[in-house]
Length: 175
Figure 1 (spheres, helix red, strand yellow):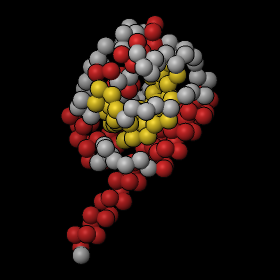
Figure 2 (cartoon, one colour; figure 1 turned 135 degrees about the horizontal axis):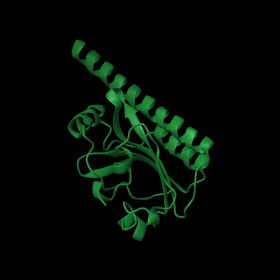
Figure 3 (cartoon, rainbow, N blue to C red; figure 1 turned 135 degrees about the vertical axis):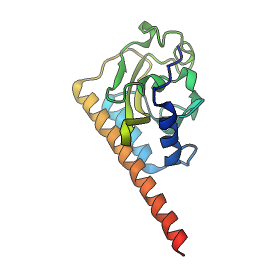
């Protein structure tokens, strides 16, 4: 089932594009965060995702080869609908939103999903830090807390990246 659009979708997309993160090269800081998330949550897959008009793009990924999925099949498109809550689905085959999703019925055969929104200014959720497993499971309260802490680190990296770009642009205009 395709997720409905957030009520502030136009503003959310404008904010996403302002960060200029889509289709950028891999960066070690983000790669390290997904490795930590997978390790802490004991899952084979972890992703940093950004949701644009038509797709879910993976800035960093652990345990998954694909670089993006259509937005229509993106679990994270559901997670960004409530920017203050980590979406946890212990067994996606038992959830009507996901049971017939091609990522559940086919490769990579997702069975568990937990995604915490990447919340930037104005309570805008650009994507998620998520962990995925091929078997049903739960996360402990400590794992959820750690996943949420790591998502804040992703946002800090995004903010730093944006600030550095703005400084470079200002310096270029002065010269």
